[in-house]
Length: 218
Image (cartoon, rainbow, N blue to C red; front, top):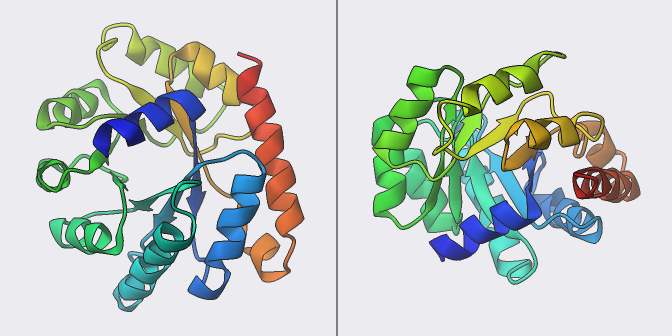
């Protein structure tokens, strides 16, 4: 399973970040992404609302059950080993965090899942890699100098597989890949709460197609 997920990330390069989508709409959202050519979907935990954690796990489980063979579901904003375990029990196949927490990375690997912790500095990236991370999420990638920073980081840390996350969209996706990222995490430019709440799933599909086209230009 791990190698399949790693290969899919390296080949398809796009992980759609889905925040605040209710379980009732998660499958329509997943289908819209898939129709646009995206096969990796991160469903995030809301750290401000621990009562919603079980609901998030339900969304992960629904995607795993109904989109198996089409779309690979992972869990995002995972900040504790308890959330790693909850996500795993729901069927998440990869764990994404905003920070570098060796305990979270270790538990992810112990459970046979793919680990993608967040980091920003060289020291954090090295710590994440040494703890067993499969990829390191460079976060946040905001502003016009972000691709240049990623390129500078990749030069001495070429053994680490970086994903660019935060501020990534179709207009700069190619620049991050050319700078050395092996993949991208893309959020509101694909799946916004307004698009979901207003039923504009065709716009999610269209935005997905645009992003896929952008990475194929590299």
